[in-house]
Amino acid sequence: MSKKTYYFIIPGYGGSGPEHWQTYFEKTQSNFRRINQKDWVHPDINEWVETVDKAIEGFDPASVVLVAHSLGCLTVAVWVKRYNRKIKAALLVAPPDTDVINQKVQGKLFEESPIQRIPFPTILVASTNDPWASIQKAEFYAQQWGSKLINIGPAGHINAQSGLGEWKQGLQILSKLE
Image 1 (cartoon, rainbow, N blue to C red):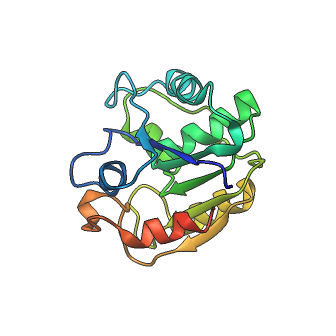
Image 2 (image 1 turned 90 degrees about the horizontal axis):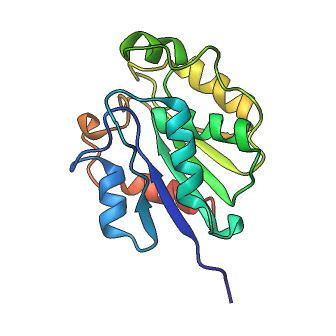
């Protein structure tokens, strides 16, 4: 009998609204739950990392898959660096360039990019026209983190404004981590 998998959605800056693919995943898929941050608009990366760790506490690490978007991806990378925990896998969608996010968000979130190798399977999904990170930056993250890179072409920041709706391709990509 296979073990039950728990999917934890980690939105990025601003959270994921009603038209975001993460919200569709949460509403239409069983075993998906959102990790809510105290403040989506004034992020504190240390607080976000602790919130992730507390949310998955008590779950068998081999049953946990993180589904992160944007700043959520960097949150996962910092969480790995800080806690050195191993889980089943993570889907990392549209991680922003730390320089860009430091400019766009009040306060400096990152002194340096979290670029250590991630000790569990990851897939990084990127777009060729993401205003938050170049495809070259996404390739760099994928190489540093040890992630399989999937370039989905011109899809913006792979969010609600990209018009992806339910983003069934995302669910197909996620299924590769099973």
